[in-house]
Image (cartoon, rainbow, N blue to C red; front, side, top):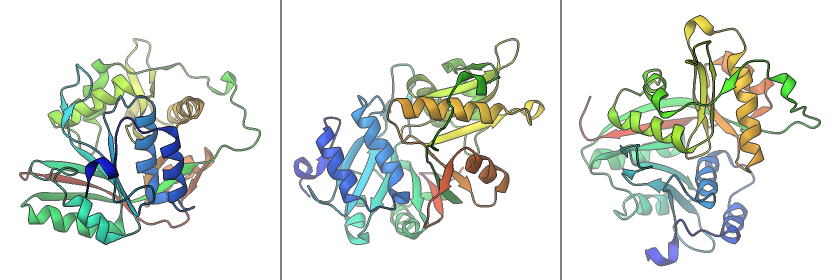
Length: 290
């Protein structure tokens, strides 16, 4: 593979994005993570992402990735991240084995991976002697703007604010795979650079929050126990959806297939489940067991 022919980096142009959109099939479920990354690349790439494809201008496999580095001056080192789209497992294997694209040695995070491709990633991680933890069973929900949607401020009766970096430890403490320095650094970077909102109490402390990440996914949403059933996440969702749409970003999320309450909630907000309903996983690839 010749990197200068097949890699699309920070200088990706609008015309190249149009080619990418044409190359993807109409059902974009497995491509949304990659497309989210591409759009952040086009928005000045504050997330330091890169794109690599197996051929150009047409391609069958695309990987959006960031290799371990500083994401903002005060964020510290954050984990490597990869997400993939492919119509050809053979070319996917080739890109995953290319050390200029994926650094397996110290571990990384694979986000939004369809179940049909998880076995390949696990195989390659095992060959490198790495430990794999899978958080699976998620489905993709994509926001469709309903006709005649009323975006007036009067539908947001709760006090809405934004998080700052001092809130990163609180957010990280309520993540299912938080607790590490790299996880904390990643939360801090998302707060610093990407759209987020929160509801605060009378002392200005966050009691409910929702963030977006470098792949444009809505995630890390949480409400403290004593503040639940008050409509906080509904209000945050509406504000954050409007904000992301206003700057041309896609709006989507992943919900566990057994979490019917959240499925009902996102459906009421105008999200539609991807037609394929293929399970999506997050794979944590670690050097040592924890």
